[in-house]
Length: 204
Image (cartoon, rainbow, N blue to C red; front, side, top):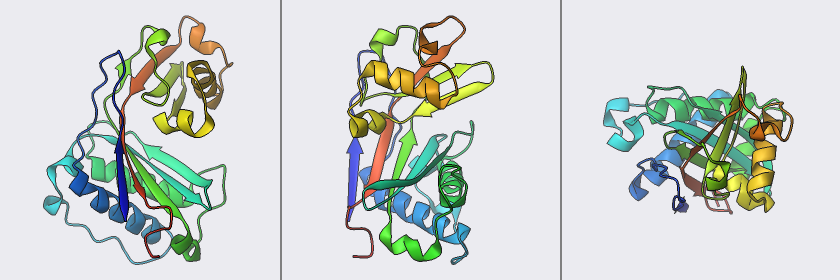
């Protein structure tokens, strides 16, 4: 059972990534098989030329893994000029074993976790922070070599407004919370298509 959610864009023009509703199950299946392969399960066999066009578009991806409603891991790949499916597989593998906040996922955990994939649209510079719409836009902060990103659904999940999101993304980048107000700090926004497994999991 699959849920596919899209969000409208706000007053700034932020393109959404293309992802057909019919591609939702394929995206989730690919992410789950990549996680399993990274943990020693069956090898991921993939005929990339057989994938639909929207999985071959250039787009970043994040894979979020939860268990019993709690975050278990979340990692992304934003490699430019790279097909979505490549970034998706890389994000899934990283989420399986490389999130520094959590121990690696265990292979026997897989039946008990829920996967959510966020397909990211192009990054758009945000000159006016007043145009940032929490829950609609994802946000990126860059300053020097520091960089942080928060997905749109972070605002919804935490009940955060614009200031909390802007402060939160600065803290994620190891910057002071109010760094988004300062010269030399670059802000970007993006839209995302969010595809999630049903709460009861794929095998129940």
